[in-house]
Amino acid sequence: MSAIGELSTMTRRKGPMTKEEKKANGRDNKAAYIFLLPWLIGLVAITVGPMLMSLYLSFTDYNLLQPPEWVGLDNFIRMFGDARLHNSLRVTFTYVLVGVPLQLGVALLIALVLDKGLRGLPFYRSIFYLPSLLGGSVAVAILWKQIFGTTGLVNQVLAMVGIEGPGWISDPNTALGSIILLHVWTFGSPMIIFLAGLRQIPVMYYEAAKVDGATTLQQFWRITLPMLSPIIFFNLVLQIIGSFQSFTQAFIVSGGNGGPSDSTMFFTLYLYQKGFGQFDMGYASAMAWFLLVIIGAFTAINFIASKYWVFYDD
Amino acid sequence: MTKLQTLPAASGSSAGKNGKEGKSPRRRESPGSLAYSRSARIKGLVKHAILIIVGAVMIYPLLWMVVSSLRPNDLIFREPGLWLESLEMSNYTDGWSALTHPFGHYMINSAIVVLGSILGNLVSCSMAAYAFARLQFSGKKIFFGIMLLTIMLPFHVVIVPQYILFSQIGWVNTFWPLIVPKLLATDAFFVFLMVQFIRGIPKDLDEAARIDGAGHPRIFLRVILPLMVPALATTTIFTFIWTWNDFFGALIYLTDPDMFTVPVALRAFVDSQSATSWGSLFAMSIVSLLPVFLVFLFGQRFLIKGIATTGIK
Image (cartoon, rainbow over all chains, first blue to last red; front, side):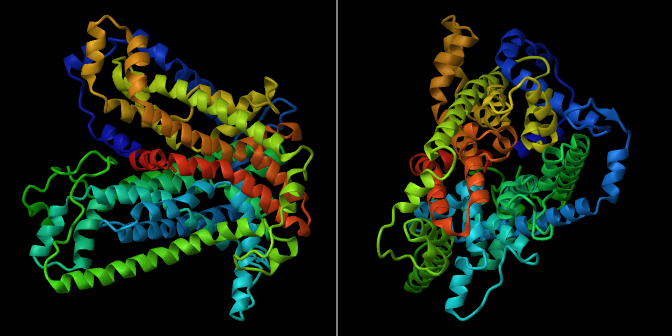
């Protein structure tokens, strides 16, 4: 079961503990906490402590040099009036809402074509998977910068058929699009999760459907899609959370400034500029918490909506 | 969906554990008439055609980068093809020494961070996973839930205070901020991956060891760890790739060129390059991708199993 599946079952069954469970609990307390010690220290010092600290900082003005100064809701009020921040939200939302469905759509399509015992499956799978391993690297972002440049590979190919392409990453209208394409290019890892999911669908469903005279399309809508819906949901949650945080590609392609004219200024990029460019740590912390709330809201909506379209076969 | 539920013996019989390679018969269409085999063959051909075209489009930019790195610079802007007339190694020699230090210096820095991270993840995550998978203790459910939640926690929420913390103890421009969190099992995904794996190991083995008088440390070291080598391998490989590619952490903590890892060194190269040095930039990009590519070649089996079971990138 996936991490998300595990979480949702944990919230689903909430019955009181039986006596035996209570007794069993705490049996190995000493040993357990020794084994958990590194993780517990990490949880306190590296995760929860800093989280609370950043919550505090979000109500302060802090530049690393002077001690933080309490300013109440000032940072959040500033966020309301910050046009660059609003723009960075628009850029990030566009990236997530266009990039994630596109990437998952391609992943599902290719997984469907690859399924059903096609010859050469391991070879194809490797080819499609490789970009997801390399896609997060600076090197590939550099490659992208060249490919979609004014005299880059894309325009060279277009020139062969007589089209004069724009400078994709120097034009504010297409810069974000080229970064979304980079995201779609890394469809290999969700594809592998889809492939694993497709294998779990019992063959007899299809056999029974065929006896009943169902067409391939009907089988897809009535069997494949419902049976795969938990996996689609899992991929969706994971990719949305990940995409909201994407940083490297936009940073390298835009040369660190989110340009041209802020068209690739991701929320995370703006946060980095505020926090580590201008050392406006209070504002950056407020932004970080805002990001957490957005991601949390998206995940919650996903979970609530999943009741209406995700089909659990249990 | 109603149709599904009326099917005989539908519920969860043959669906195995998520991610385990299914051993169900792969043939979904029973070969019968001639007409079937013919249309199936055409279908197969169409599928292969689609896959080959998509695969070629995806891989082409990478191949083109390799070829371009072996070409004179000016060709990068006007030669979209893949044929090479001569091998130009100067991009590699120029790129290698284009920054303050030879490129190998940054690769060694990266290797140190990678090795430290791998070691940290292996030790701390396997210990935590053993506790979650095998031990009964108070607060287990809550801690396990918290652990799962931290997997999904955006890195950015903690980065500012983490930076403050590490800068106050003087760790900026050292590798510690990149390694120490791994020693403390903050890559919770691997804890989860290992919990899943340990749950699949028969408990009889633990019981047998316990009857022989082994305590938890012995059971962990002698029984569980040797059996969870595949999970450890998956963790090693993913940690390698993620740490090798990690840009954000290095960007924040490593500002001194002496300490640069490969991603920040490449970034410095992009910023400093003139339009004429794309060739050497490509060359060093390829050098930087090479270790990941090699790990991919030899560790693919673990990578694909790892993603299929836990859905990591």
